Structure formats: structure tokens, C-alpha cells
Image (cartoon, rainbow, N blue to C red; front, side, top):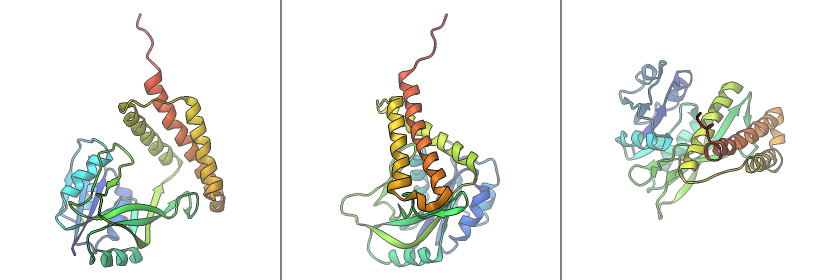
Length: 254
């Protein structure tokens, strides 16, 4: 059964070639760019003629919907530029599509700050990425979009790792975290939700305890401790941004 490997990208020249090298076995590669200022599109065209650009950014969910609509085959494999399909996972994917329609989750193994993270609640990070076109699709969330699976369509897990090269450095982490916090708070505010700084603190503390202690982040060494702290900070920032957005007002004009 033919497979379309689908990617949404923006300014991913530093990642894209290594990602696409692990997808050359796919029957089709589809790349939807959001307006890159680097060599992303040029690199993509080395691997496929199916490269499109849409700069009308309405969030990750909508962009994935647009990208999957460009695929011409019966199965869609959604991959991010900072991910790599291992040979073992490739074999599992090719075997899985020979069966009946289903949604398949892939186990991600993330590399972060110098090591693969095998605890901290990060592994295996199951993500639903292989699905029959037209039978499942992404929602329209601004951030943390999800694949919507209709009732009656089974969800199964594949063997083999999807390697995930998360953050180049601390600055990249903080920039990405700030972007997600803003998108999350915008979405919550639009839904009429509010927050307090106290709720941000308690959620942040709970995040640290869960990652470092309950999810055995201490087994990931210094990287596990750093990730737990950074994740707690990111969690607090989401609620702080929502508090600022909904509970504060600009100064009165004089």
C-alpha cells in the first residue's frame, strides 16, 4: 500500500536533509512550508517535487490539515523535520499498512542536551502519526494539535523508535517554550478560561515532581534534572501568560 510522508516546515534547513534521508523509501514525500527564510525549500526539492508554500499561518493543526490534503496516497505518515525514522520503524510501518485501516502510534525517543532521554515521562512518547487518508485527520488547534480518530478505527502501536532531536541549545528551548506558552494562553483565553499566578506555581511544582520523581527523571542524570526544572518553568509561564492576558489591563490614558 503506497505511503505519503508528509511534513510541515519553516526554517528547518539545519534538520531537513537528515530527516528526508530516512524517508526516501516512502512512495511520496510532501512538504508544506510556512514561509522559510533559509534553504528549507531548496533542500526539500532535492527529494521531492511536491513542495508547496502557505504563509497564512493559522496554527499547527490547520497547517497539518493543509499538508495532508496535498498527499495523493492512501496512507499518510506525518513526520517533523527534527525526527528520524529508524530502519526498525520503517519495517514496522511497511508491514502495518498491508493490513486493514487503523491508526498507528510511533514511539519517540528524544535526544536532548547531550543524551537520549529514556525516563522523565518522555519515553516512549507515543504519537499517532500513521493513518489512512480521509479516515482520520488533525484538529485545528493552534498548538499541541492532535489526530482525531473516529469511533471504530483501531489505534495500534508500532515497534521501532522515531528519533526526535528536540532542542539545539538552551536558547532554542526557551524560544520554543515561549512560543508554545503564548499559543496555549491565546487558545485558552479564546475559550473564556482564566488563571492565577498561584495556579501557575502549583502546576509548575506538580510538573517537576511528576517528571523528576514519579517518572524517574533522576535516572536521566543531570539532563533529567535540567529538563524537570525547565518543564516546570514552562508550565508556570503558560499560566502566567494567561493571567496577564485575562486579568490585567493597560494603564488608563491621560
